[in-house]
Image (tube, rainbow over all chains, first blue to last red; front, side, top):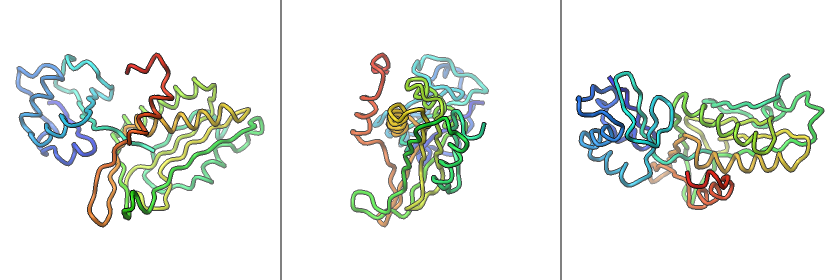
Length: 84
Length: 161
């Protein structure tokens, strides 16, 4: 199982059943995962495409979306951040 | 030593910036400068009333990232005594959102550290802000000027990131 975390506005668009997912064998990388999520949740996919989306794998920012994702991982999808 | 070193706290309850700043520099008679910045929730934004602001964090990651940013700024300005308190959850107008404080031997580095740290927090702190007013709720994202300030304070070698 892979834990998916959707932050900010993405959290409001993500279906609840995407919180904990069992990925099909062909989903091997973060890029595959993003495409798989987009297929499951078109509204979320549109929002992610329209803004700068960052991915965080096991609490570390990832720039290389060819990184592998495996059972036990936590992947977070971050819309633009705004502190202060 | 109390009030010394780098401190980052994510808090869910209202805090008093004056009390926190006083505690941060208590007993530090070696320091010649205390610079503080406090950001508050406003009662109106762009002419529209604000009932409340909600800040979401990514548990664990938010504190880790803000600590990393604060460490970078501390090293860059040789200002090891830095305090960041950031509120999350529901915040009402008049309440403090963020407190940044720097303690230094002299004022120059302390001023710079606080300014640059705030510029980074605006765009790089993993927090998400939602504002609720009479016409509903909306997510707040950094303005173009926030990104521009962030770009300005960025080190040249990190500019491509």
